[in-house]
Length: 115
Image (tube, rainbow, N blue to C red; front, side):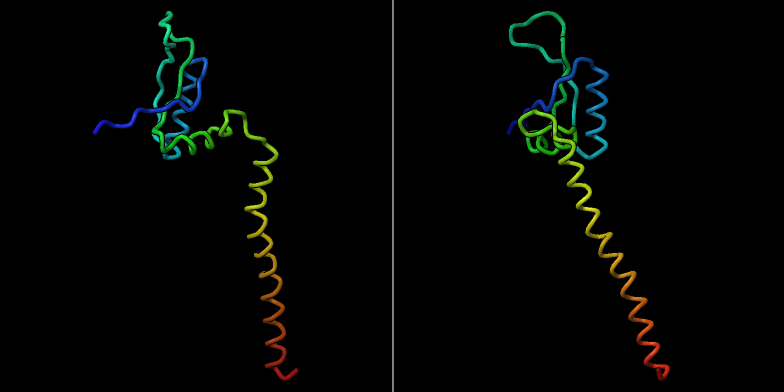
């Protein structure tokens, strides 16, 4: 059984830029490599560099690099709204608990003291 070939996530104009993005993916647990992009026509040296990952990791890699599934940049306001919503619910729940527990404790202790 042959291993699956790596697939391209994105192209970059310089090797350094491609290495930075590949390193960011590796730091987040996605195996990535940097390879020169060589067109099928067989021109001179590589004009672009590509970051490649295993086929199963492509969707997560594109998400981590801020790319939409079709290759367009992700809408930043949509991403910001999503991140605020994920934090907002626990914060509001924490505030409710911080207000409710002391009030409940006060009323219970007031009733137990004979008031």
